[in-house]
Image 1: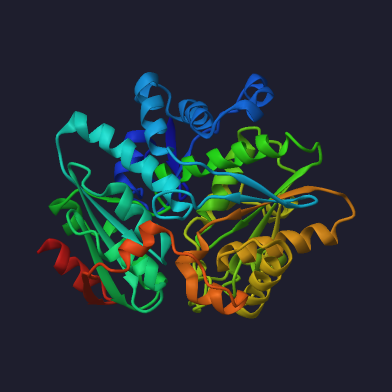
Image 2: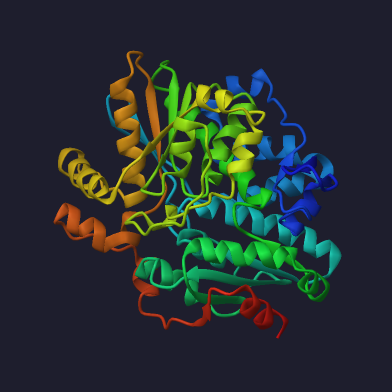
Length: 433
C-alpha cells in the first residue's frame, strides 16, 4: 500500500510510515495512491459476514503484506470485539449503533484499530512514540482507552476547556499511566491548530517521535469504512431498496470512511453529510466555496469544528471537483432547537433515545427521504451513547437515563488535567520539558 499527500509535495510512503508520521511533511493528509475494488464474491456474501470478517477483508486489500494475514486477522478480531447492531426504527429507516464499544462512541473503532497496528509495528522496532491528539469530546476518550498502557506509547490529549460534556471529560482525564490530558483555554480548532503545528516543528521532530491519533491519521480512517459494509449487508436482509447513509460529521473522517467503502465498490445510492450550526461543508455543497470559520459551541459538541481537517480527503475522493461531490453527497445542518425537538419526538414516538449527534443524523435522513420521490432505505449513524450527554437528553425527553456501569464508575474518579493557554509555544515548551 502506497500513500500520497493530498498536497502532493511529499514523497509517497507505505502504511507503516503513514501511521507513525500522522501528517506528511507538506502538511497535507495521507491517502491511498489507489483504492482497491473488492471482488463480487465479497459483496455476494456480505450479509453473512461478521464485522471483524469484513474488517479483515477490507484491511487486507489496503495493507497487503505489511502485516502477515494471520496476525492481521488476530489484531482486527481483538480491536472489533464489540457489536454494531443495525436497529430498524420504522418503515425504511435504520439506526447503525456505533456506541457499543468501551467508551460508548464510534471513535472506538478507529482508536482500537490504530493502537493495535501501532503496537504490532512497535514490537518489531523497540522504540517509543508520542501520540498527540486534539479532541472535541469522543476522540480523546476513545484514544485514551484504546492506547492505555500499550507498551512504547505515550499519549497527550488536548481538549477545549468547558466545551466537552462532563462524562467525556471524565473519560479522557482520569486514566493516568501513559495518558496525559491538557485542558486548553480555547476551542477545538485551537487544539487542532496546536497539534498540527507540533508535527511541523523541526525542534520537536528532532527531540521526539510524534504521531497523531486524530482522524488525520490514515489508521483511524480505514476502520471507519468497515461498518458501512456491515450495515449495508444487514439492511439487504430485509429490503432491495437503494441504500442511503446519513453521517453526523464534525471533522468529516467518519464520512470519508463511508466514501472509501463506496470507492471500494459498496453500491451506496447517496450520502447525507449532516452537521450542527458549524455548517462549513453543507455550505460548500450549496455554493462550491469552502470557507472555514471559528467554531461555535452547540449541544452536539463533538461536531463543533470550524475547519474540518478531512475536507481535502473528501475532495480528493472526487478528483477535487465540486460537481462530482454534489452528485453523491447531500448536505444538512441543524441547530440546538432542532436537536432537542428531535430527541423528544423520537423518544415519544418510538421509545428510542438519541444523543445530540445521532439526533442530527436522524433528522437529516428523515428530511432527505421525505423530500425524494424515489423510495430508499436510509441508515443514520448513531455515533454516541445518549448517557454521555445525559443533561441534554433528559431535559428533552423528561425521562431519567440509566447510566451504563462503566460510566457510573468513571464519574467518581478524580480529574487530572494540566491547564494550558491556546498557545503553541507553551505546548512546545511543555513537550520538550
